[in-house]
Length: 409
Image 1 (cartoon, one colour):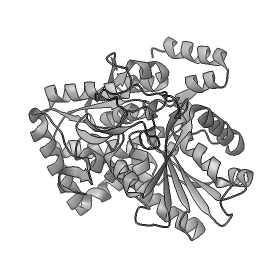
Image 2 (cartoon, helix red, strand yellow):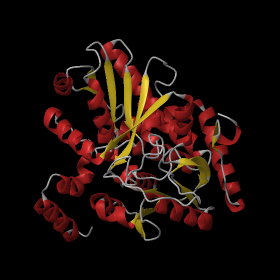
Image 3 (tube, helix red, strand yellow):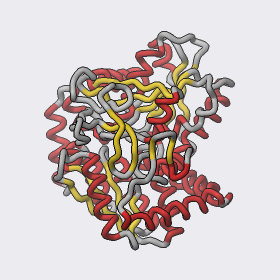
Image 4 (tube, helix red, strand yellow):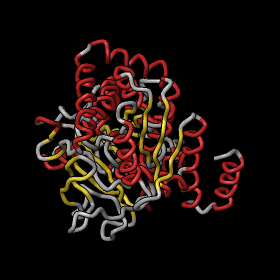
């Protein structure tokens, strides 16, 4: 990593002058925490007694037999508190907020899991909490909105732009500029201005540390491949971190192929030729943008994968050849979800199901002596409305929605 958070030519901190001092404060506190041997121990203890870590590395016996190739293991971040990997980052940032002495946190969310995790952290530590969420995502992730509000957070639907994740991020930054003395922005993924990509990866690296130890204990060997879905990049950087220094382990990031890379209805930044390098939202990376630098609309069946940019660390790892990027279409993702449910009794989130889809497509071509790991970054109950639609059950969807409205969602 170069100075000021550059990973080769990606990253940086492109900030309005008013925010420079706030970012310098965050970087100073973060650097001091990393240098304090007691901090990581405090973090691990918190995640152990509050968030059920370490999460299991589950041998998927039925799926392995079904595909007839590599032995498939699943890293179970769905069993982390609040149902996804998001708690790893927000609880760590909560400890930093305590060190800074601030009393309010704000966050953006797409799929809603980061919002729930942030609201949970705020309740745990006694912070005031505001969550910004695109109006489209508020509608399709109603269960998570319900829980955020019950946890005491104010959920603000963002009606600007395309009303999805990038617009929620923009609104959160506007809030922070106004309230930076009292407020910390708990950015949810490994994107944004330095030090956020590094900071989020640091906390999410607990996934990869555990997975590496667990697979060696279970198999006595490192995996052939590790698969993770890629929206902004936090869960991918989390599990990839455990294997970056092992060149024999192939790392595979899976983006949202949407309705196909031959259409404009996708969110593949690194697996397609549609993205170009630009600067937006405080950092430099690949964005899906037009010739004038205006951000294009994106699409994914998974609310957490339709972000227009991608982690600058992953952009660097793509160009260096360390990570291979693929894209799974909505149809492939739905098939993978159905297979995981019916063959193994696992219910991955639609985001995570992208990683399952690519792993399923490749597992059969590998040897039975090979091991692969799929990062199940979250659980699928949040997607009940979308999945009900996908599997042709509108009556069930209407029933659940009526119940959610009845109880004040």
